[in-house]
Length: 441
Image 1 (cartoon, rainbow, N blue to C red):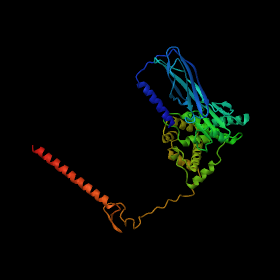
Image 2 (image 1 turned 90 degrees about the vertical axis):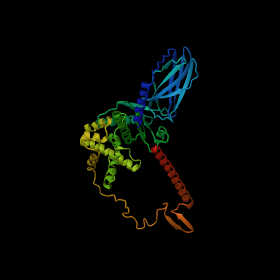
Image 3 (image 1 turned 135 degrees about the vertical axis):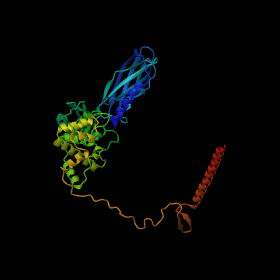
Image 4 (image 1 turned 45 degrees about the vertical axis):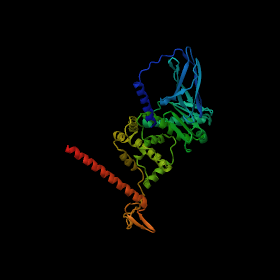
């Protein structure tokens, strides 16, 4: 949905530009930008400062245009200025409200106008919203830069090695490398990570991939080789697949995206096989069609969704080969619907692939008993009149009621309806007489 909104915004802006009447703005030859800077103070703010001068006349207006470089969409802010030959102005972007993760590249430029209407736009510049609170070390290989601040050189070697190993597994599965650079920020604890996440993020998050920004953040304790081999390749797979399949209409189904990410892990999750076998024996497997939508919020069902996704992607690779898996990824890049893509590439529908894969699992041993429901209505179901049904007399101690409706409102309603009928009849009679008189003429 974010990608669709982004592309729609770009199309709307282009349409407005094409349909709007042409306005020829004279270049402001006499406006000079003395200084235009941006300073990141993660996680709180980004401060944009501008100093400009005019040789003739006064500078009367300034606008700041900024946005994430990878998103190609700019926000326009009217920045207050005091008109004059020289202006100094500032805009402070609150990044705890307008969140950007650490490592986001932000592009910006300024548009200035003088009193005569002449305009100038500064060349684009860029600032990295870097988390300078920690003494980061960094390593770069194959379009991946890993940042870490504890564990020394040896831990950095572990991080970059699992990153490249993950890229190898991804390339072997879908034939894709990273086309755009990715930054990975490795925090030494979940407590440190939480200070870098968006406010009110769920507490169990251990890592997150921002595929539209080329950023990964995660918590890995120094020396935890297993977690490094799990988290980094997993999140890199999301980045590589997102870059390969990027289009304005939709991406791959979640089961393919998450299944590939789990397949890419250098350190596999040990709980997968046991959970799958148990669900198969108990008849609790989730239909593949359902895994093409969002995963369940329930923790147990969500874990089962991940397990099934990994098993399905591994089944596709071992049964049909990596060429077919890459062809599926390219079909998703072309926004081909899931069922059509599977039919075209492997000759199976979603349900047929699901049944074919399930046949490789242990057979179901338990049957789920249906919820008991009454087969016939009770004998006295209609013995009493429905409560509130007008026109049915029900005796009650001390008086007479009509199906629970008080007598006074009922009489008033009847009189109102009767009066209305009389009035309607009188109008009808008058219209009939008028029509007869016209006809007799």
